[in-house]
Amino acid sequence: MTLPVMFACMLALADPTAATGIQRPVWIEQLPQEPGRIYALGTADLGPFTSEGRALAQASDRARLEVVARLRVSVKGQTSTTTRTTQMGSGGSSYGYGDKTSRDTLQVGTQAEDLPGLTVEQTYLDATGRTAYALAVLDLGQAEASLQGRLTGLENSRHGLEKERSRRARWRLRKLQGDLDRLGELTALLSLDPLLARTRAERVIVDKRLAALEAADLPPLDLGKCAMALRPNIALPPAMEEFLSSRITESGLKCREAGADFRLELTFSGGSKGPAFIYAEPQFVGSILYRLEATAQITDAGGVVLAKAPPISLSQEQTPEGLSAQFHRQFERRWGMLLDQLLAELQ
Image: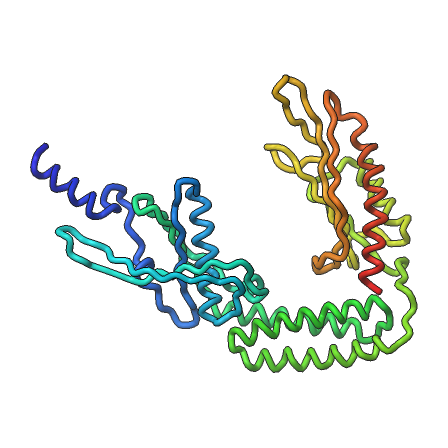
């Protein structure tokens, strides 16, 4: 081996990026600094049983959590480790260092889940060092604008209920209380004092209106004045869609998409080709197993789950004939459960 080749190999061993030609990102050692943006680094080990994609996902989760931790959010079950990293140049000289902090959590508060403007901007996989890195950023301007829009939406919802004296209005005001509480946590977390004051003022108005409805003798919920939209995750056979729509109307609800109060969400699973109403599953013996698997739930117009039924799982060999009829029978029982839960939730 010639001297130049030996020297090149030594450089490649000293600097893992030399062999791949991929430049190690600067943000791993020094986070970017920009007005109105908060950055954080997340890392994950690429272990023997951890895929590259999984390691990058873990690093991304930890980066987001680190941003939230910088905002002093309450995190349950949190552990934190900090390590000092030193990057070596040729000849053993040090040319950079930095602290890496990893936080793991069993449960993160709603602040982390709801925080708008929080994204993972970049990721990097160091295959030689067996480490995945992620850079998360919180855009404070985007977060504030999003929270302002969210509060405006809640105020409009309350305005729409001012003249309604019903159990449905009472239930919606209860939901508004929870939405305003979560919004208040986020605005306090971001130190948005004017928005926090506006949120608290809206909460007082909602509390007063709800107290009046709680004290009133309200008539039972009239399903005839409510509408439900059918929301499957796939295009259903026309006969099946007609069957489901008829179940909705026979219960007294109107079945329509526009302005629906509730949604009947049906989620069908499937094989390797994705969701399907009925899908074929080849067996080892050469036969075919036909399957129909679905879950059903009722949500409000905002997506809050009000009722959920046990999943439906049907299968038979050789032919799919008869699975639709079996689904009808299974759904009939679950539909009764869903309606009972819905009425109980709105009382």
